[in-house]
Length: 617
Image (tube, rainbow, N blue to C red):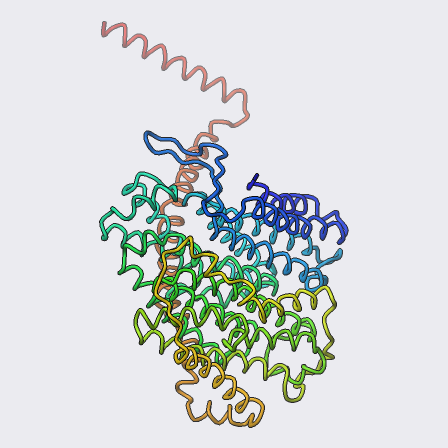
């Protein structure tokens, strides 16, 4: 079925725009940048229709990549039902975001900017690596895509590289992810040692017979990699700062696709995790802690994009709860619905920012629902979806995870339900501050062009109806082991009530009695300060890790090793050579009689030396 065409089409768009885009018109940049992604989406549809129900994985072998003794690894792509879901999300949502970017990034085109073609080249390169990641038939090919999307994230976070905060954010994302990727690398080394292979089929067939301690170590190391890529405790700190990039980047990479790679990878490894209960428990606890902590931080943020950034971290935590309690299909289900409503929330916030000529502070917004109604109504559908209000998409996937969490351990359900209430509160806090009350800014808000609002409308439809339009758990039932998920109307009612309560509290504090929010903040100053400052985690990391490493590097590597040793040796050799040359240059007087005298003197010394040598013999 030529699976290689799926990633190669966006790569062609990257190559053409990257090499020639500076000379292209905007139309040509759009043609190659967006057309390549749409063609990839069309080829995905054609491939999946041609492969039928995917009751068995379809594998394509292209060439042998590594062969050493008995270890052989190929460059192979494979498609099964899990891959099919990810391909549709990546290319489908990716196509909408690329189209939206025509309007949002329009200001970057022109002789004084030149970032337009570069943006689409980077976005196409990301699509290439993300598709390699989900199509991979072994861990090493997956790791190529894994590292590639990290590279593209770095490039796109630092897209506005002339601004220091953007380059700092890109560096932070790159360094934090390297920590996680080191864990992933160790997991692969241990797989080769334990199973003699990195091929999915071989590893997963041998996993059930391996010692539990081996599987536990591999599972935890894989989770370290997932924690970096999918922004989980303690490696979540890069994602909120990643909002320094253009808003479409936040929607595609940092909400809908790349950050979900850890969820996809750990779900793909279910044969390892189902035989390593300790590793699964670690995933569930980390996911739940991340969901709760990030949700509480989101309640006090004033930058509209950072509110949704912490929301992304929190919702990723929910997905890992699903994986950790064995509800792999529920975790992937939430991945899909989250792609709908979170991409919409980010693109909607981008429409608000576009309407306000770059303003991102919620305190300078207000009353926008009448000025940008398309943006308002589409974002309302996304907000209701993430709040878990039925029948919106988030209700189905969130409750599937919470129900599985209750059967695993009831306290996880109750903490997850509390987090759902907090989620509804902070999302609607942002909605009410932006769209209700009176306008607090000094600009002239205007609705976004159709090239931006049409993708919003499509994502709104998916946020409303995607939950029952795409029954992901049923589709993936042949991929993952079955779990006990008997419906419980009472538990469902509690989680829905928590979401509704969060919405009502936000309405009272920010619409009905707006002074109440300041009153609560003033009377809970200690807690508010702690949450507003994100629990001072960045400051702790800075003091305990960043400053010692930077200071130590300057003292040991720069002053001692570089300046003291390397420069000392290089400069010392140069100084001694200069001194010797200074002495020898005295012999070069330019006087012919002086030269003749030295020749005679040298000849006499030579004759005397030869005579002494003859006498000794």
